[in-house]
Image (tube, rainbow, N blue to C red; front, top):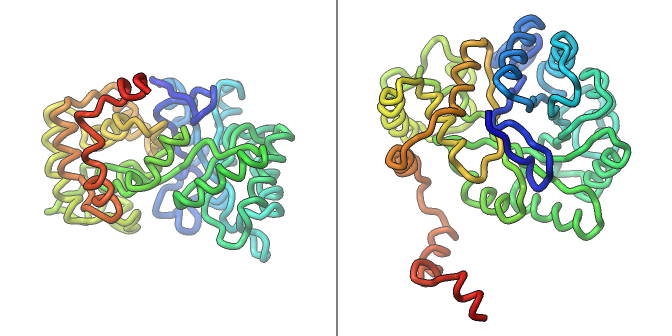
Length: 351
């Protein structure tokens, strides 16, 4: 296993993270994701940990808290010391019928963290993430509540998921100005079939030294090897029943046409190649793997040892390239004469 610092911190996390959305009873929308019981959860956690994974991600909303319960119990059942794992969870989603049982307000965050700590059977959460964009709560209120949790020791680092670039940038400015704990990570959708993150979020993360945690790296199973332009709805895939995340299908078929021969050349699954492509991206800190079975997990784990050639990466980059979009194409056009022949280091030294 390989490791990387979590954003601009000294905490080391494995490049592959075990996501536990499949843990629990599969209630609600999660019936399409999976319903791993405690024995299955224990087996998945053990297989991941034995392979060097120290990073585990869940959320309070997954199967209405059952995922957190199963993950916390797995650590106990397997005798894993709390210091040996980096535990991440998320809050925001509706966890009750009350008007304030949802969102990123101080009230909901304070209630949510206590419930998560109890379900996870721990006294602290390593990475506490706001799961979604709250259009009502002021950013300052959310940040102050999270800063209080860090001060209290219940949370060690904070992150965000599924936010816009402008809002993340604004939150970082507020944290710096008011000396509050800052978001160290973004958990976001990113895959070779969905590179929208590269337009605004990617440059922001690199500039601000934030970590990127990738969810749905196989585009909801579309890149698993089961799908192609001739088999667009296989019976044994959850994506056939739950078409998410949104993907440009024609581009996806073209990508799979390139992905499959590369996988064959390496004697591995297309899924492993898709994960290796993500691991090659400098902005990516850790890729979150979701699995129902140990054999699926083991195939994903093997991606850490797969190195794609420059030509293979070039092929995948070319077939998955985003269409031009303003202001990107204008920035490239107007900035062209500032690149290439200009030796930035020499220019800086001369001045």
